[in-house]
Length: 435
Image 1 (tube, rainbow, N blue to C red):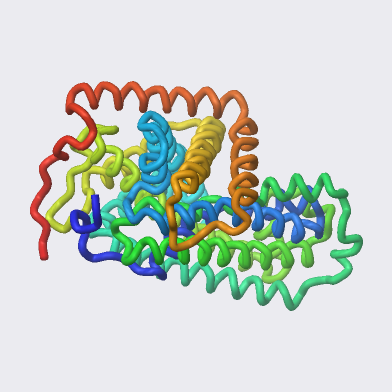
Image 2 (cartoon, rainbow, N blue to C red; image 1 turned 90 degrees about the vertical axis):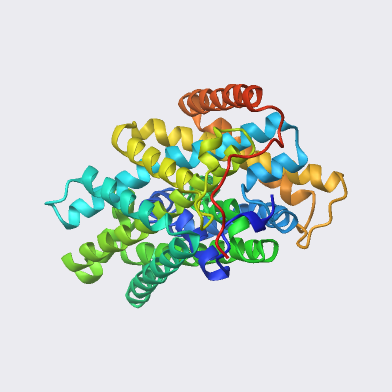
């Protein structure tokens, strides 16, 4: 369906970019930067350049597909347009599952860091309250939640920028010699970590119908969000490797906080926790946006119960938003963290594989997009190989949990199609839209 049937007040490039940045930058940027540095030493900068180029190969595939399709749903919409229906169902349910299971460690991370700042607030309570507040904001529409996302992104980038500038003036050049301390194996291993750390920019593609001129705006937002996150990561990597000696980097799970303590004392650690809380607020907001829109589009196509596709007079998918918030709260409180991480990785890579395969199918049919992936077919082949390797790399837990979720999706869709009839039947009645 076209954009005429969704919320009339749409967001622009800056809000779309903020959603993409929020999908990437969470607590991971403060942890994975140290993990990668321990693997590669100062050459982690080269590793993240390789990771960026790898992520860019996938981003280019998404950019071409998003310039071809203006419908909401992202990877699901691409699969529905170019691949068999059951594949679209798998990709759509994988997208919902990936972001929903990922919400478990995002919400928990916010609660734990808020508890460090304000010990009187229990970690779980803080996570639940934040999610509830974010849900209320989203019920006012993407225009409001998008503006909130943009403001948070500005604050986040400002804080990190100040930290990088302060740290950059105190870098000890001797820490970068020798530069390659763990050989090429360490660089490649760190690049794998970097590739994972840079994922999440695709959050913006799911809400295409609520974005102004999506076929033009979304590709620009994808590249802008990936570029912003890459610059932040490189800045942090230079600072932590230039401030902390290598032996200390290998033994810490909080490299940014440790560097802040060296530069600013105890106030630096507090400052880092504040930045993490701000960053995770944006991430929780991005997750609610993605989960709700992904579920809404599935329900609109009878791949979830039709009630999930209900919208209010402003065109806001309020049932899907409540479902997103409720599932996020439940998973934050009750899920096993290791299980959630494994399931997220498997399902996320399944959606990415589906999108890349859809690009091959679109090109085979002669589809002409406004943006064309450079070096085709090499670029999507690289993206496909990387994503396929990560599917295997999620291990038995991720594969079993993710596959079980997808089976539920396929069976549920079959039952719903039997109840509602063939695809294209009338959607659930909606409230009339305001002009």
